[in-house]
Each structure stands twice: as structure tokens, then as C-alpha cells.
Image 1 (cartoon, rainbow, N blue to C red):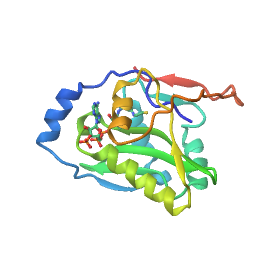
Image 2 (cartoon, rainbow, N blue to C red):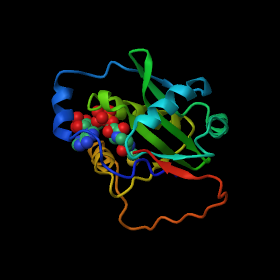
Image 3 (spheres, protein in one colour):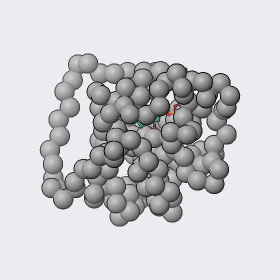
Length: 174
Ligand SMILES: CC(C)(COP(=O)(O)OP(=O)(O)OC[C@H]1O[C@@H](n2cnc3c(N)ncnc32)[C@H](O)[C@@H]1OP(=O)(O)O)[C@@H](O)C(=O)NCCC(=O)NCCS
């Protein structure tokens, strides 16, 4: 699973709360297709601390993912551009979310939550009963968001992985 952003380097929650008071979610939330790739990649590159993988997050990598999971990933579109995105899929048993993000200028307006709810509904339609994701422990923004929208932080397990392709290099946005 992807680890979203490593650090909390975005606008403060208080600033974002202030913005929220004067605005609401007017974004269109819809299924992601491969034609969205350029807009989604541009969004990823704008997210501070975001972890992008050379193979998995290439156009080819995302195309493979979307072919396996054609109905569960999502974009949010506003002002003619992609301002939010989630890669969401499942393995037949468990759903997972990757690269959950909203452009900094569009945060605290309900777009992130609306996209997550969209993914959860799409997974339920696929008869999936559980969904999970990884957040870096240092990602204050992400961890507050998951807590706020009612997700459970597991304290009773360790996360293990094993690299199968050394060429799938990770790079962190500044
Ligand atoms: C996390 C992220 C997707 C949230 O998107 P968003 O559109 O701003 O979130 P929403 O407006 O839908 O917020 C949903 C709830 O979470 C709360 N929330 C969101 N960000 C928060 C923050 N930084 N601090 C405290 N609460 C926060 C909102 O107040 C809202 O609560 P409410 O429903 O009680 O009003 C966005 O901040 C982001 O892209 N962050 C960088 C990438 C990242 O860290 N992704 C998660 C990786 S695990």
C-alpha cells in the first residue's frame, strides 16, 4: 500500500478551517479513468511530501491498476482541473486506498471526505467488506483527517513488506 505523504508541510488546520467557513464542496466527484492521468499526476506533483513511485505511478502502472479496478478510483474536478484524487482498488477480499489527496487551495471543503465515501460505496458494490490504507506516522494532516472521518487507527499490528522490483523507486516531493 502507498504511504501517502511523509510529512505535514501544508497549510495549518486553523487556516484551512477559516477557508471552510466561506466555501463548500462544489467539485464534481467521479470515477477516474486513464484519460485523467496527466491531471492526476500534476496534482500529485503539487502535494508537499507526496511519495511517488517510478513504476507504480507511471502512466503504464496506473493503467494496469485501473484495468484491474475500473470502478473504484476517483477524481474531484473543479475550475476545469483535477483538484482531488484517490487510487482505490481491491484484491477480492480487502480494499485499499492510495495517494489520497486534495490540492492545497481546495482543502477543508469536504472534497477529501466525499472522495473517500465515493470509494467506500464503490468497494461495497464490489462486495468488499473492509478497506485499509497506510499513513506515515509523521503525516499530521493525513492522520487528523482519517481520525476525523471515523477511521480506526490500528495499534495492534506491525506492517510488513518486501520489495519485488528494485526499479520501482520512490521519490518524495519537496
Ligand atoms: C488529507 C486530505 C486529503 C484532506 O482533504 P480535505 O478535502 O481537506 O478534507 P475534508 O474537507 O473532506 O475534511 C473532512 C474532515 O476532516 C477534517 N480535516 C481535514 N483536514 C484536517 C486537518 N488538517 N486538521 C484537522 N482536521 C482536518 C475536516 O475538518 C473535516 O471534518 P468535519 O467533517 O468534522 O468537518 C488533504 O489534506 C490532503 O490532500 N493532504 C495531503 C495528502 C495527505 O496527507 N493525504 C492523506 C495521506 S494518508
